[in-house]
Amino acid sequence: MPGMKKLVLLVGIVIIVVAVGLVVFGQAPSKSNGPVFTADNQLVKPPNYREWVWLSSGLGMTYNAEPQANADPHFDNVFVTPEAYQAFLKTGKWPNKTMFVLEFRASRTSGSINKAGHFQGDLVGIEAEVKDESRFKERWGFFPFRGNDQTAKPADPATTECLACHSKNGAVDNTFVQFYPTLLEVAKQKGTLKPAQPETK
Image (cartoon, rainbow, N blue to C red; front, side):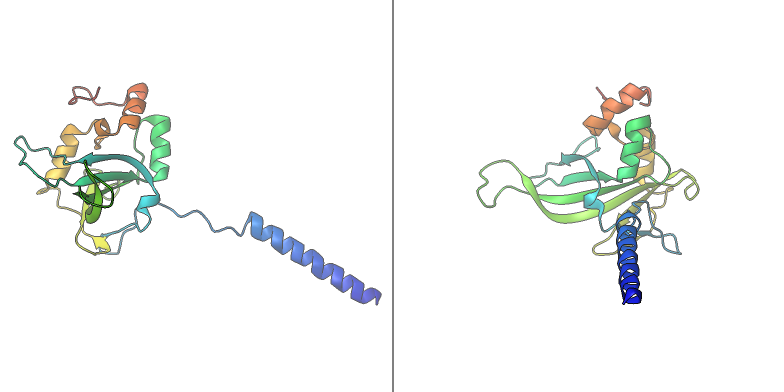
């Protein structure tokens, strides 16, 4: 019987060691929120972007000099990877592999108990912006997702207006921090705002 007691004790110790190991080491590693590309340079749509940091929402925003009246303007929601957000809070700059997702949603006025104003409705479209200094000559790439596609090709920098507009008007690096109130204050404190930018007060 002494041998049996030793065996039971040994099994108990093994179980405890395994349990502790699972608690300390066996937890699922945190998901990387960085961009994932296919072999042909297409960006994989991040399935969990709504778990990222929300930066701001706009309603009916346009950068055209003479915008057309729109009775049902779209909402746009901007999300950024948590890692990039934390880096920006510390430095006022976007690190390499930063990734933004711009989500467009229809606006609605009628529904449930709402009597005035707008609220967000169905998903209309998704675009992504990625900073990858080794992949893009301009350091940033834009990816419009079409319909239900789970991957997107990079927009041609020679023909897209996105890159030119962001490069010219982005308050920090290539991004419209001027529209992200909390990060605008960080950029001011860190001194990373571009000079002579449009209204960034």
